[in-house]
Image (tube, rainbow, N blue to C red; front, side, top):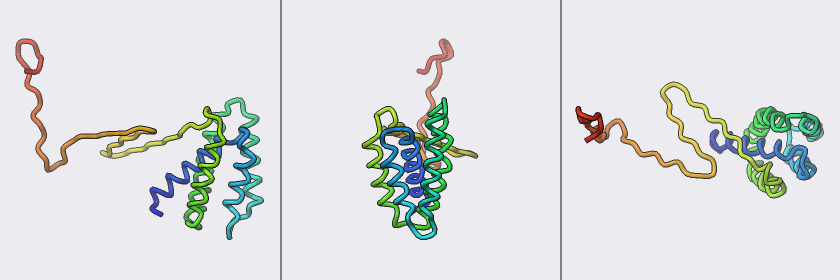
Length: 156
């Protein structure tokens, strides 16, 4: 699995898991995540305790959405580490995400997208739609800029 695919899947999994906290989908989500971590090098009891603690934070926080946002990063890291150590877990995580999404109320089926660009990079992003970018590469001729009329400043 490429690093980009791994990161995207870990983020999707984390967002979906924390979205299920403090909902009717929580019990099956907790059980599914615990099953996912029943692999060598992982103690599912530790994962279950972390899940329960995090769900408790979400349930008791006045800012439920803020609490969930705070938990996405740590779960993304845990899932990414699991996928690096056990790439065979990928289909199981994908299936778990789909199972959880089917159980979530529509209001909890939100997407989290974090885009970062630095230097002279360009970022084009969308969720649930298309991005169409037209441009000329560095070796290609660019169309001329519109000329302005001196009288009114409008392009000719």
